[in-house]
Image (cartoon, rainbow over the protein chains, first blue to last red):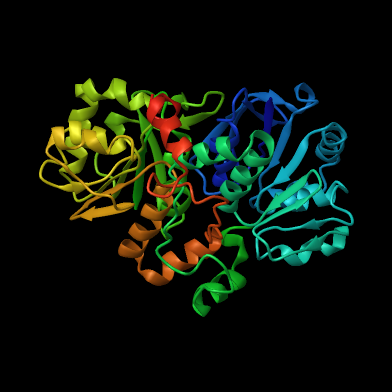
Length: 211
Length: 211
């Protein structure tokens, strides 16, 4: 089972690594990090680089595709070669998934037209322009399309998908293995619960996370 | 503000990337990934490599030290050069932190003697041999020492520490930025709540996560 995780310059590390940590541990799984050309790909925060291990041409039929988001997503909204690849891969029996603004790349490739989907809360209003219906849910399944909200939601998405692929027992073991019993220090993870100054700070400067 | 994140072969990616995603976004922060020699360092699951950007000799006085865990921790329990470095860095005013079995490396370097600490739930019983007092908490502060439980707990640790360093408002904005409003699909993240078969599977095969 191949788990293909897309990388591009200025992606958000946790968008990719959260699902990798879960889906890469599925029985028989092998993760591959795919981008235009192999080599290090730098994240949005800087300093950190993840090594891509395959080019787009080398990955044609993954069992799961994970598209992360991050500020670098913007430059890829007009990357027709990437969109062609996304459509080609999606035409196989893969699960097509995204985290954060990765859903905007799926949408730009025409894959979310008429589908329910989500994205980072700051980017939800960009989905309808591509025919997608934004929801306020953290993880959205619509057939083989699975989109997750911002950054950390990729962990929830991956565990939920792991249950669909390998059964609840395997997914529960993975959740216990990564000790995913979250205790956020604040009720600040959603614009519905966060203190107003935090919401205002991000609305005034979405580039802090979205570019 | 320098955030030094230790890497070693067969570390667990999320142990390092969770805190990086939070602490690396603190105002004025710059993360550095430090190991024996610069270059790619491969994670426990395989395939994924993170690029180290500095050698141990180059990092002498970080503001925050993050030590991840993972199967590769075992080989480092007798790495005296690493232990010397951990002690030297710890002697500066740094916050000394760990995720998962990273606490066993701090303990082996003698830094947790007499202190309250935590680790992955499967490794808690290894702490007393080094004079540390294991607790069942997810994030443990004991003075400048901050230890977190397994893998995903590094996100909770980093947000809590971000609040101590930069204030609640900044930490809340970071939590909202990464949309950390977790919705685990199962009540399986702790051995206290997980279904018995999941606990048994990991107890029988801790190498699934700890090596």
